[in-house]
Image (cartoon, rainbow, N blue to C red):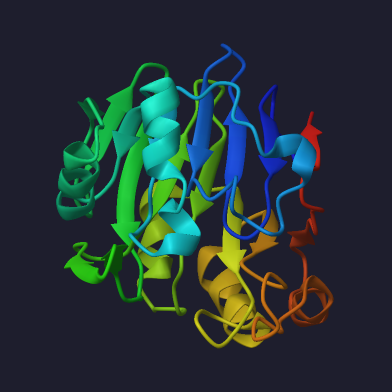
Length: 234
């Protein structure tokens, strides 16, 4: 995996922190303080410039409101989710929709499709959160990373490959609520990345898929099975 100066940390489940060569911090799917997979040493968010939110389920935005109040980052998401976060105190909203690309400082963010449900639990109410999505992020060093969010495999992942060609893809493999290893391997066939990072597995007993199962099903693609709290950079 060639990160060209990026520092990539998996915080467990679907949450990643990426520090750019220029020193900006991006967090994808901010579920940290209440994430049982996140190590205690990583529970406190020290700094964040950009939050990317794939959808409104609690295991993806569960700590977004608190992080927003503490650090006032730019918040990227689909309009309905951004509108809810704005009501909760977000001041720097960078809403977008599928197929769109926007530039935030030294990174380009493209919102792509995900095949999943989306609702925001707000107290005892379930709020419409728009649709679930994924992101392709292109950094100033040219590295392109695709975070699929929660999704099933879908044929238009081939379009993501043809239009954006991400070298590194983060795919859910836990099964039950998302793809399992079999579907994730098929997604790899469509996306043709150099590296796949499994996510959204092992957090709860029902998420039974494992990186080892995925590894057996893919050929010619590097499977990087990260440990929660681990950082890779090269």
